[in-house]
Image (cartoon, rainbow, N blue to C red; front, side):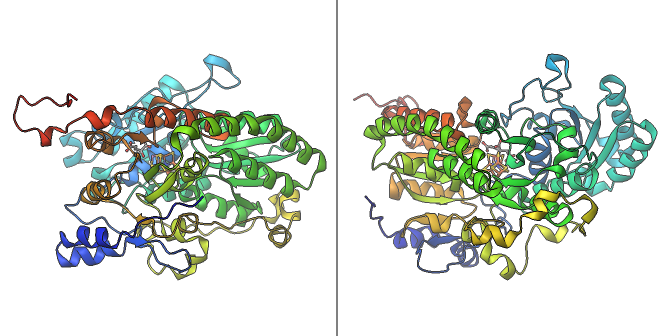
Length: 541
Ligand code: CFN
Ligand code: HCA
């Protein structure tokens, strides 16, 4: 049954009271006490207030780390000081397999490529060093492609990574070299980096190979990055259903798969925030419709599969999908029922990225848990309020600095099946085509939605709700645990996973059940609560 949530108005007032008035006015708009009956606006995608501790990352992280990072046969060359590369090296847990060529196939994921800019390059320019680095990477690895990623200093000194890339592409002949103006400071968060990555991938790669696929039901999975092996689990399910994945954007992906991705019949969008741009551009140019899906949670996975079955209007496929669901879902439900003995009625808070703070509420629901408060680091209004708000967004902070590609239809290369199935027909069937329901409508009344949560707000929320589990990232983990609350990382999964699909749900239930069954964090005393230097950090009972 529904849990009745406490009214957090006094909490909100207390939080805002500590800020200078101008800042309080700004933060107030990013903190919304949910009333599902109202069309409330959640301020988002605006600049973080300088001086405030934010969870956010930078534009370079969103472009290089998130979108291009998981592609295994491109060399991602970072033009910048070594720290930008080193501190982003393999931290995101995007997994790869050796691919059909076996262990000798190209996989550069384990490497760290950087121009290692020095003071001298800042003063006299770094283009020469960049050319040398591209040449060196090419000579050693002979890759199909090299992507060049700009870090903050590159934008400040004006190195032209696009001109250098064009020149080197010409010179090398058989290597696709292209650049990204994804300087860290460029947007208000990593979100700007997603947009830049999508634009360049669309411009330089998608559509380069017209080879027709052999499968019967051909899809792309957009916005799935194979963190902790999520993509492998989803692939396993697709395979069991007889659905062919042309390309995943971009978990365990290859340049070859991106090049052919426009031959698919349907785009499935998992993380809308990072990749809606690609879905829109592919629909305009190649006529491929897209649907929002969610493979986090047993029921969501079943629902997504049924949506695909309906799209293809094929009885044999639909029967196969039902068979797979009948085989897999009972195991998931059984594990949830068992775990619920320890999780039922507990409280969760989720402050993560631009989609997981929403998607993972589903898994907590299946565990009988209530999400009392949640928010994105860098979501936009549509991620909270649904796509209906898009036309009313006046200034999209991200897009001010981002080139808008003028995409035109290419009727010659429209996928016949994709363009045959009219969007209106799908909408008539009630399929959420090109439609996206945000976080807000899925949350309870009186839950507190907080965008780009600050450190101060995190502390106050924990004090007020005393949640049973807090979900965030590595920067939050230890601070939260020192206040006695277990923290589940929903970025890296704390070395666990997969959490997507049917097997992923089972893994998640077990991990959460385990975390909620220990009292160790409550026994901790935070160092800042110690009464003397010799006061132990573990309270003896
Ligand atoms: S894998 Fe994705 S699912 S791509 Fe995005 S919005 Fe980040 S890296 Mo961290 S875990 Fe996170 Fe999402 Fe999409 Fe990951 S919630 S913050 S930029 N994200
Ligand atoms: C990023 C990547 C990140 C960081 C995770 C974290 C990821 O934002 O640059 O803060 O723990 O998922 O690896 O979101």
